[in-house]
Image 1 (cartoon, rainbow, N blue to C red):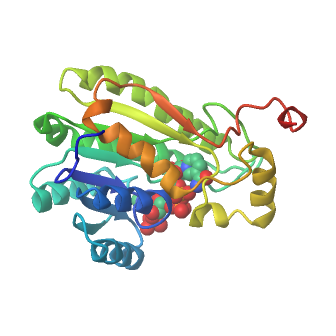
Image 2 (tube, rainbow, N blue to C red):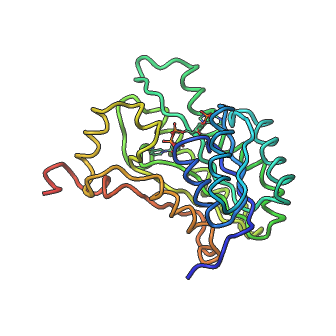
Image 3 (cartoon, protein in one colour):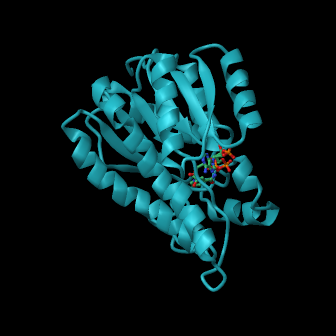
Length: 258
Ligand code: NAP
């Protein structure tokens, strides 16, 4: 049904684990060539080697911190050099440490906004010339339900960063439309990743009870949507969001789930 994306060049930030690694796996399985970015060199090299061994497109790693514009530029340069251009950018790297407003330090605020929001800007800015040359450029952001739709104690900085990504998306979609580049965002609910596991068993049990489909989302649930946004068939969709949350944002209360 969908035309192939085999041979496309893809950059995934935060690809060393979690959702980003799943995005890289899904694109590589379709024959796309992927560069993943993250700070953990060992995890990145292992992830790239493991995904490449599965066959499909090539997956390689570039160390980098997306809160540094120069690291984003280096990652984009590597993707172009290794794969002859850049067609698809997944701005996915993110952190979600908790801090209440009363306790949050300027440094904690800067870290979350720096990685999640400024990192999105730096990644897309660095990729712009290559995406323009591609003629079929795609930007796919990993936002969240937290911030744009819901709130959570301790995550005001995180929620602001994720809502901020959507503000970025709408203006970027307009600026890039004339180059044929689409900019869309996925808004995951609670997805089973290493990062989510770090929040603890009690958090996960509470979330599962709040999800009408009664399970955490899988990395593949998110990757399928990213693949769709990357297809030719999604080429008329831009500046839009897709919530993937097992229905978590639908009920008014636990009683409403029946
Ligand atoms: P994760 O398992 O903790 O993975 C986070 C990824 O981001 C890692 O690859 C990490 O790599 C990378 N990263 C973090 N800081 C970075 C930095 N400064 N520069 C470059 N890479 C960095 O998290 P996840 O659950 O997969 O989350 C991925 C994205 O999905 C985030 O944007 C998050 O906000 C969003 N999200 C997740 C959920 C969920 O339920 N899991 C829900 C909604 C939204 P290194 O450690 O190697 O740097």
